[in-house]
Length: 257
Length: 154
Image (cartoon, rainbow over all chains, first blue to last red; front, side, top):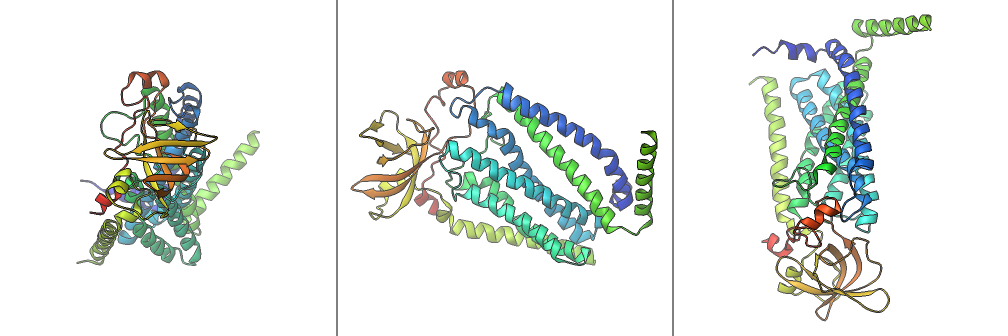
């Protein structure tokens, strides 16, 4: 198999240009999908037989919770690649995904609390699912904090990668907590074997919301990675050329208007 | 072995070691990870009176009796055993016969006296007309999410 495309993508200037081309498409697709998901979820979908309109929190809560776990896996895998292959791009992807993951973890916790109060009767309980998701937030914050504590970017990335890999053990615990142990949180709706646990007209906006949120995360991480690359490679020729081209575009635009 | 291969082995060993430690740890402390006991646990194993604990199960259909003020009495069941519960306080909106709940309180003379009741809904979502046509819905929820703590402890 030919791996040249992979090695080329791994070089900062190539990846920067690749992300520059890809990101707008992802952003637009994410916006369209999320617009449909929220309209479909909040307006088109019927109310639940039990929870009535309160179940609509699902359209924000479930996508946020899903990406909170997926992004942690991405961060840890990027960390492992950075540790093993000493790849600068992987270091940038790792540290770029941490704040995005932390935001969605916080969003999942927050929407979960707002859902829990009217349905369960409590904002927060210390059951296995809620507690392990809170630990996930602390792991993200730990990675962000650890990265900020180092002067040297390479040393920071190595320490963060280790922390990210150690925290990986929490991901299956969050996911399977509702199956392994008794919890107040209900089981998984979407990743459940057998018959779908959600009716089709409720599920469609939810799937769109999931896909849209994943694309939004991809967009955010690509953009953050680009910024991280510019920062790390400042002083190199390709960054100076990029910045000069960007400044030129701005001036050109000013002349037109 | 090259340096890169050594690092690869180190990362793999770290992940495997942590996973193994987690499996051992959580198997040993499985009982402590459970959020609530089930009626089976309480009926089959004596618990000390006045020991505060959480009890989870389904409100048995036909067992709900409303008394003076906010006082309610009902039977709580898992897949096997059931237990009478008494509660004086505000119930969550989802509370009804057949609904899963988690009650906090203590045993007194064979009755579980609760001071807090939370609703534990299931993972199924559907419009009301579809729910009526299904046997599993319509107030009859699965008792599967209520796992016996004592048996889990092995």
